[in-house]
Length: 130
Image 1 (spheres, helix red, strand yellow):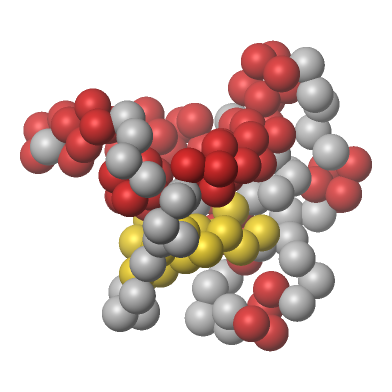
Image 2 (cartoon, rainbow, N blue to C red):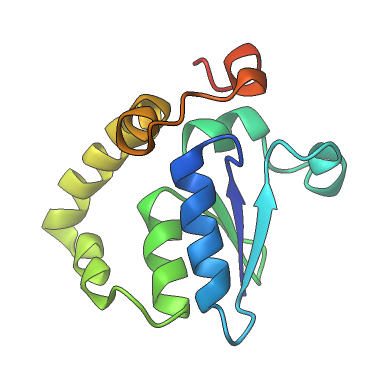
């Protein structure tokens, strides 16, 4: 079981979570929007601002993982995009993680360019304008 703490205000992030959910035939993923009203009460150990900066996930044993570790594990659990596992190989991992951090920081601008959907209004006022 992997709990993914994602940015529901990001069109790309939300689309990826919908895709993962549709492929999760064995219920191995639990998706939690960090902008949910009761998020901090239900997950006091997850800082929503930090989770907004970099994707966070939690394993069944309580261990928190971040960034591409979450993404790669999620796709592995649904049995898709097997090629992504090479992003966790030792040398590739370093460069993939650097690239992911750049993507995470600029994901709203990238999303706007790719989807044509601008950053949502609550997000512009709230946590996403980092």
